[in-house]
Image 1 (cartoon, rainbow, N blue to C red):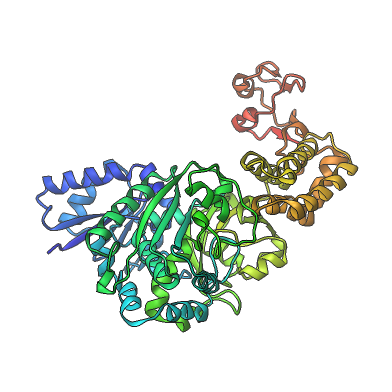
Image 2 (tube, rainbow, N blue to C red; image 1 turned 180 degrees about the horizontal axis):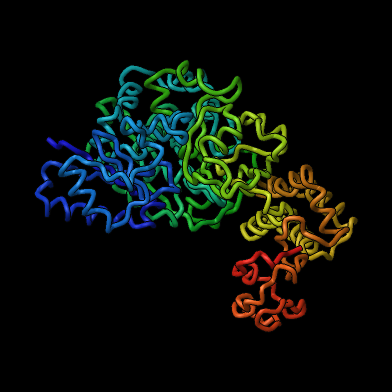
Length: 595
């Protein structure tokens, strides 16, 4: 019986910061202090507050250590785990109060969250099936196979209002119902774990922190629609998720929770992995299935829809990781419980990956209908360096920008669509006043041009022409006629592309045109970038009244573009300047500015 448990984050973010070495060092120090039999070290998934990684939590007192380094471990072991005195300097400051340690659930980052899909992430060892079972794991599967008919399962999902968390928001229960209605000698259950949006890491974190939740839900899906085989399509760039899925599938088979005659019910179901090579288009359901079949990932025309003719030409359902992660809890707690959260048409919670210009970079799960302001300012800790919020990009390259005028919009499927954005899978990238919205649109379009499979002409050619115009705009070479042409192209590509990649590729451009058209006009008419981002439109200057002639800027200029003598004002040669900004960064007197 252990008296203390030390939970160390083993998600990708903390692993990249050295959490694996911290675990090794921790076990060495515990052995040295004779505490190995008294203190358990548990590697978990992501706790969510990635900005403070590596993270370590000591129970039972719930001391939350942030940004732990390997050299901190001896002190934590000798002071806290041996003598019972938490190391104050390493504790997350929001948990420290005059009266003692505050519960994590009372901190600004966690108190407005409601964790369903993430309920076990950061809590259990994802490589130990017994810990998942200890938190109620596989009880939902047992209930389904022993107490419910397939129609009962589907009705529960319909009543819950669960919609697909992959971006489109299609009702999950309806998708399952359609697949069940189609008779076939073989049906399939697929999981989309491809997650290709820049800045998105929701599904990866669920797979790394709670893989059995997805396996359990897919098995329930197999029972509901009459399928005996499942496939998880996960990108090979997620090595930790892939390894933990392999372990989880092996453990589930050993416990006969996958395979033949599960729970003695006569129902058989198994799951295999298929690794993707990172093609964004394989996030589209038909392209994903084509890739699983061993072919080049390109979308197929719809109809027929996968529920009728999907993987290997058989009825197939495809949901993403987050959608599946909700299902066991809906079965156990009932559809009314889930439907009581969220908004009228968007039930439950949503996981978001917070990134960009925000203090608390990380993973959050909030009820649908939570406002963007609450997510950014309260949970996310606001914008660094006192900067102003300018916009947030949701849905990645398929989504749109939400400007400051909609900062108080409740986040749900319909509200976001109404302002020209979309939920997407849950990436939420925050931008401040220093960001150029034309450059942001160009960044996302560069991504979709690169990721287009090339099968249909509107997407293959249309997005390239759009990018060419955007590039002209950022270089100050475009005309207002080009802007009209860009907008026309956006609607053409949107209406005529074969799949969701091309149909949504214009969204970042259209949303920035809608809310930040003045920035486009400034680039075209005034030949300036208001945010000072687009290099071709930016010039650096030295204020002679502020310059002290310290020569620091000249010594750090890689292009030798700065002239002047000691103690005399310096001058930047615009013909030589490569606009790297090194001079402005090094100047200690604020004498260098750009315009």
